[in-house]
Picture 1: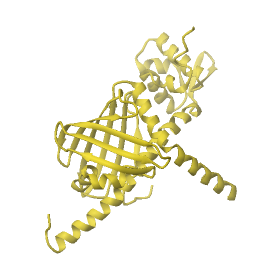
Picture 2: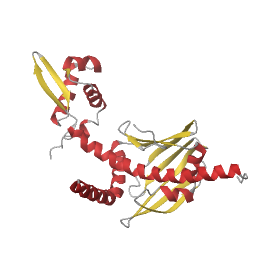
Picture 3: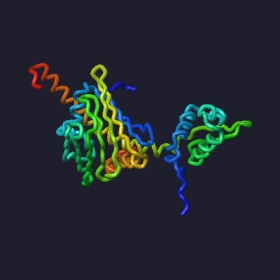
Picture 4: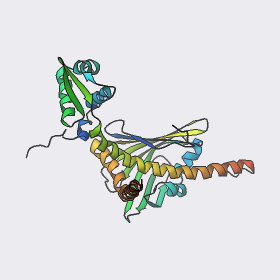
Length: 120
Length: 163
């Protein structure tokens, strides 16, 4: 059986640190490929390979401007990742929200203690 | 952004194997530490809105064990346990963490507290040995929250209809 492409979705595409770097660079605006090569300090073929993977999952768009290939970020495929982490964040928001409530009680109790008599 | 008395929990994924949770509290750190490590208090917050914590065992010493059990509102039981590796009172706790539903995927979590002017920033860094386990960890939070998020979705749908 053919091995499933490991870069078939955005989750896998952003698992590679260099590709995340590319997305960070493109987050500030559209850039020609030469810029990306210079900023990443990688050889052009490697950068092109990473850009191809990002294009395949729709994370970057490309257009020709004269002789330049211009790349820009398309954030839409990142939404499922964002949603996925948000769910987990929600769990911690609940936990720590409750922890905060307990904390307020302890703070009040401590204030009362120091105001009256030290029971610790 | 409006200044609130306490912060909101923020989750980021610093690397492929890590999860970082941060939150600020309007309280000195010795109190945050107490709420984090006292079994009767853990029972009051660790379940969030998702269930009741039925057991919280804490043997707070290096080599000591901990175990939390929650019965989720859906009726199923979720348990985590681990061992304390490093303890600096009111500052830092390093421990292992195993979700008993996936006992092969142990993580190391580092809990730190820093206090500035009576406010405390908590960070919890969870480090797995590979990305698959890290992702499964995030998914486990999702499963527990599934019922609750369905309820929320329903509320949201209703409010959208009204608006």
